[in-house]
View 1: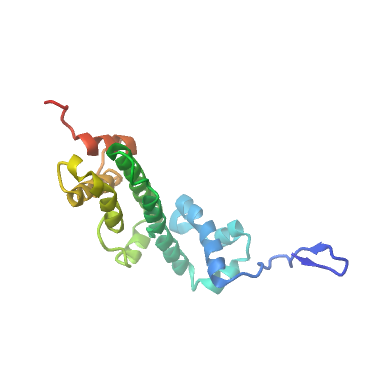
View 2: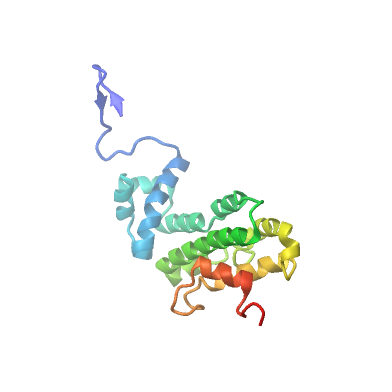
Amino acid sequence: MTNDASGDAVSPVQGRAPRMSADDRRAQILDAAIPLILEAGGEVTTRQIAESAGIAEGTIFRVFDDKNALIDAAIARVMAPEATLAALERVDASLPLDEKVARIVTLLHDRVRGVVAFMTALGPRDHARHHGKGHDGGPLGEATSAVESLLAPHADELRVQPATAVDYLRILVFGTSMPFIRSAREVTAAELTDFILRGISREGD
């Protein structure tokens, strides 16, 4: 908004996006694009994204070379581990093992499900085009160190070394989040936590 000679607010020129940095503009566009991609996949149009962001369609191409570049940036944001790692760092180190594992599993479960839903919405073409672009370390590999640090104080409560426990936890969280691996029934984070802590056999059997 600007002011006229009388000091009253005047709206920007219709169709012209307010000035902002290129990084802020990219973030604004991605904020609009990601929910639309979840709904429509790669068929979403730049016009739809622009309308959702409240900008002219041409504004998109000032900060992204083309639609593929925009989709790649959306994939990179969805796959970025920073938010999950920050949430793991906020887990109270003094919690008992069962509560700590419950929080870890919930965070990792949500992360994998979010990535899977997004890539499934995009489909194999965009998945293949983006495959191998800096996401090494296997399923949830970026969380290994943080989770191991959280489990380390409970080494005497674990049947295996903390590092091995992290491997099992990662495999189970990842596997039960994959629609092509798990059964048709959804496995909740609470169920998975109980299984990780107690296994499949009855105590005392």
